[in-house]
Length: 531
Image 1 (cartoon, helix red, strand yellow):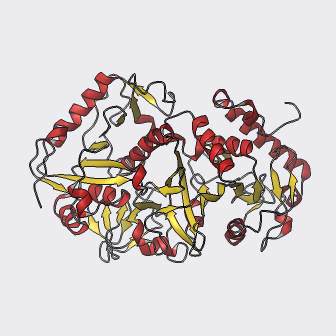
Image 2 (cartoon, rainbow, N blue to C red):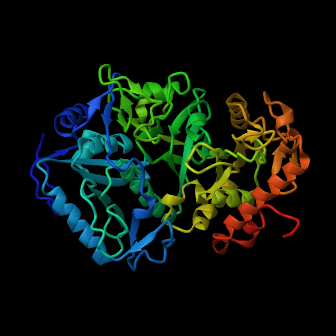
């Protein structure tokens, strides 16, 4: 391995492994990273310590003059002053300089070569290096030779805590983004997902600034025409499951951008939930977890090293990170033509929203900004009945601009490219959770197939009296009786009450964003008789 100099970042360590192979990182992890081992399928098993998920309340953005008016300040983007940032940065550099060996990953964010960011990751754990080697786009030898100065650098000193007594710190964890200096500093968390989402946060700033829509979504493409489709959805809505479609090419499972030329994947890999994973349920993902992949925070048999994906002893947020090439239907490079369809997935546990409805551009902006789904009883401590959850643009924790900025870009692009926008409910029918039943996955797949085939373009619709969107009333291979929710409820008054209750939650939630959108978008939301 050729020695690599990181002195421009303040790193004095001489033993730096730059873009080591997976085999080298496996060896480094087994030798130096306590608790790391291999699964019986060849994955590197690693543990992230006390933090087994992201810490959004510990995310900070440095408030600099150049970008201060761009950033949507508040509960998503907490401001940090330059002095405190420099204290945290020096703390991270000091820690990294105490290590005998460091790992440097130089790679790209974005498959579109006209819209790539050069990203450098500096870390002390081999598992973190392999993770980001998987999640970023791996350079060729020639690209690495001519990599030059990175656009953004991640200084991952997550094994070392932030000082809680430092101004602006609320815990021992701090994830700080400095837009102007092009740096992300991580202290007090070894959860690898902080690096991945740190890069996405950067893309969410850089993209809209260049008239590019950054999207927290999965994407597939037609194998004959090349036209794409994007699926937005919060956890539990089926975004990853429905994008694993052997009839279509996989562009990516999580982060994309929409430019004047089409869409492209931001990442070079996938970061899939591993909880309850099985070959029968998710064959593509299950088979992708092999040599070169990372399994995070899973429980395994100490003799056979067979992973028990149903075991939640450590966390329910078990994960697998693997190169996108491990997916047999991946389209490499991960770029595609403009979307024919944009699909918003929601798991409505109130049993109110239809399985499939069509949205106008203003309604698309409204529901994009709303980012609705519902938690159900038993999924989290203290949740005893369905609970509405909203995340703007289906990725609230990673936004930098006001949600209206992303919604404007979405509306502009769907109008320009005649893109259809659909709201698909993968949740309950015939009543709320506990009374009705979840819409069967084969029926949801039939709906997605009909969207992609164009069969729903001229399907009959009726207007929903409360939500205002056009409800599709006929879809191939889907029983007509489930397509209009009111018809599936035995108690019609109970349905109207539940629908009104959910509509009011939409209205109340949207008040937070109304000042950043046009009145026509606000008016595209649900209507109640009292309003």
